[in-house]
Amino acid sequence: MIDLQGFGDQIAVGAMTTFRIAMASLVLGIGVGLLGATAKLSQFQVLRRLANAYTTIIRGVPELLIILILYFGGTVALTALFGRYVEVDAFAAGVFSLTIVFGAYAAEVFRAAIQAVPTGQIEAAQALGLSKALTWRLVVVPQMWRYALPGLGNLWLTLLKDTALVSVVGLEDVMRKTGVAAGSTHTPLTFYSIAASIYLSFTSISLVCLTLLERRANRGVRIAE
Image (cartoon, rainbow, N blue to C red):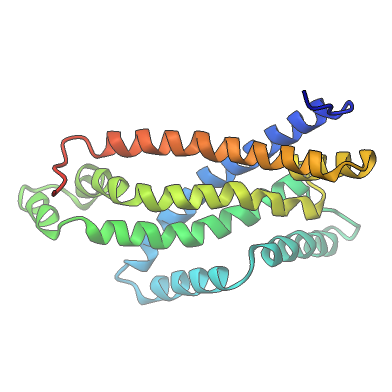
């Protein structure tokens, strides 16, 4: 039995914070990714250029730098706006940072998934008199998810691990909690191993869930041998 020396509750709280920030970033990031993919495939050149600039910049800058820029930049902006020192909430900064990072990569996944939907099916829907909105909802989206799930699954696993980066701005996640415990007890190997086990548990459970989702999405689809 591992002796947590009184830090068990704190580590549990940190694990829940890690899960909360990952889930919030996932939900918001999927929304941003869909908007980005739609803009990339838009007939309007301005939208395409803005979306391309967004994905290029975000994917070209390390996640840690984005977190630091948004956290400290947000603090500077709010302080200037209100005329007094205002510090950005660490949780909000972490969610926002990871959301725009996840959204940039998800936009490319969704773009490829939308383009993978057979054009003939879209043309058939239009020939039946379906509006663009109905064609999108009934034909494109159901198939898009099936193509996008593997890529989104990989992004989710990366997102789970990237939550460790937000501890640098003071977020009390599992990485920060175990770091405090390691420093207080002078047993870093024990507590960092616990942190690794927690992340591994999250990713293992996620892999099972992703496998089930992919099986459900591929129901009725004949896979070529």
